[in-house]
Image 1 (cartoon, rainbow over the protein chains, first blue to last red):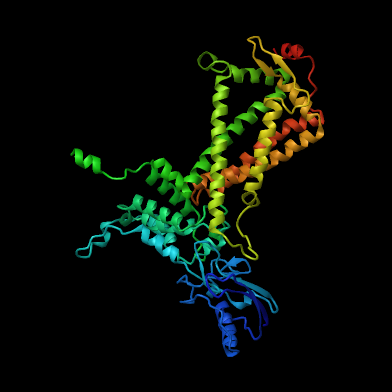
Image 2 (image 1 turned 90 degrees about the vertical axis):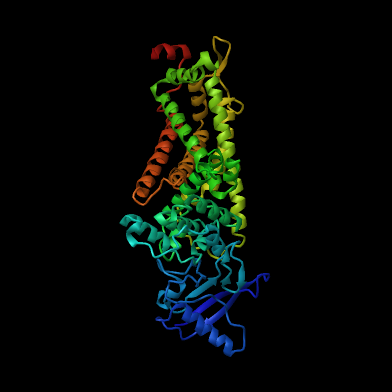
Length: 258
Length: 246
């Protein structure tokens, strides 16, 4: 197959950037999208030019490293898949493909298609610790978790932190990511001691990173390679409201009175 | 202090938009129920207008409850709009550069048109109050004086005078369509924002938002439509109307 590629090239964070046109022959339909980019890069390197920078790691859809907005969709065509899982058979011979980085004020572009997603790491860090027993290995059945709750927590924990939710959101909001991260520990007994504090600190960090506010478009849920539901945003909102308005900050007063 | 730091967060602002939206939504349901009294005869809606001014009069005085309601609604409208502007500002910063071609997948037309439909509704509300509440832009406002010396508009006559003009009726019906799509998104969205949503009920919530918003559209539009088409008769002598309904 022959593809016409329009790829976003930007030499660094301060560069203005723009699309560069490439024509690539010999694309096989069994190639993954990233293999197609590798092929392109080999030719660019052979010609002595600067290859296209893009993120990738596991190439089996579980690490969340690959990004790219392909023809206006994060991770390209295909439901619940990452860029590395997209095969070139999703395109036709002679198709024009527009490849852009994930765009968000909180994800500055490093180079070409590579963006800095450490804002997500800082949100996770803001969640802090969970209080865990550090002595001998606890008896596994000491904390009982009902099956539906375990499944729900696992649905939230499926998030690979790729940032497609932010990339797909017209508001650049990170509420699906933060909602999933707040929920997966918030649902389990091990996450209860710090549940309210965690909801507050993670939401505060999300705002501090400069992400937008959800307007319930539900684009994120559609773009998420793991199909995480926006019900976790609702759950985060509920936890955050309770944490902010109802739960006491400290028990200092009571302890002193005692 | 806690409330202020709550408001400073994006979720806090969203909750304020949701809650004020619900108050305005409930008001619209009551407003529509009042409007539908026009079908019960010319005297009935005028009596209803008088009733709105005399509810709990011994406690709050003439139109006291009405003014309290107006004050609450004004606070909600201002909080709703100011908060939305703050959120829009935050969202603009969060997405400084647009995609060349953003392929939207899941969002509804109603969700994408929230700002546009909201702007239409705001302009309409101002004109609507100038027309039917103060009478400033009503072509020939019909007023009569109550016994206690309170001046009050004659509702049925004013409605008939306005909606006999086809373009006034058409504008009203167009704006009601804007309100309908605004509330279709809002009616579902507030449940999601307040975290009442879950996967088992989401479908039901969508249906509820559709029924409620479309119901409001039909209810509100029926009044201008029926005056325009002549289904609702021109008012006869006011005194005769009142005696007819008694």
